[in-house]
Image (cartoon, rainbow, N blue to C red; front, top):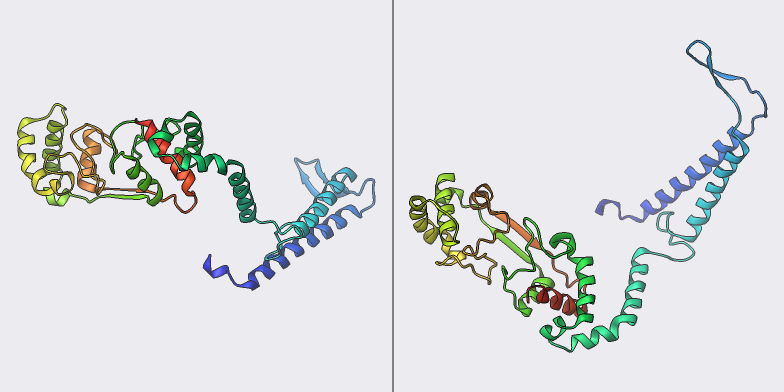
Length: 297
């Protein structure tokens, strides 16, 4: 869209819009100026005797078009629509958003300020704060994590005790404010293809309490310790500093089936949690942090 920022484009849009309205009016006038009664046919015939008539528009239909044109002209005079013309009311979507934000701050600001002075654990235990936090969650977070915060494949469950970056208030707050970028590099080549990945898979099953192939797990352990332990730790319990998941609790973000885990190992994974500090103020982030913290505590 950077190619369409010149002021001339606003004039172009305004001219095209006005020409279209005038053309509609001329067309309407031309179609309604014919005499009433039988005006013959257009000469088009179907099925031997089915002829297309050539009659003027009904008056009620014509007036509907007239009302539409008048409405369009009035709207373009009052609101944006003619290129860069702001309209008599000088309305804009960003201006309306800012006005609504200011109204919300004036209405709820004192309540939010009260909670902002309390620590996260105290706020999480307050029913009123939880209600406000839930509304914020449903507005900003439910699209990915679900309305019940149960998550889905690729989006963490926020109700359990399994946290990629830590479940303490400050860690949750940092995730909401700054966002997260989780990258699992593809390890298929380093492990010798799918067969090597399956050995590591069986080793992961053995340390997460799932039935496993003992021989493959034995072969997978040194591969894990050499290649995977740098992120996930020698014991496979993960590293919250970099968002490396705990592989011993049988919780799998991208699915726990053999196929899903092998795909994660061989092809890697990429996940992004967007930063919310750009459109949520400190008070809302404080309430949202408390609500998310309270889900698993």
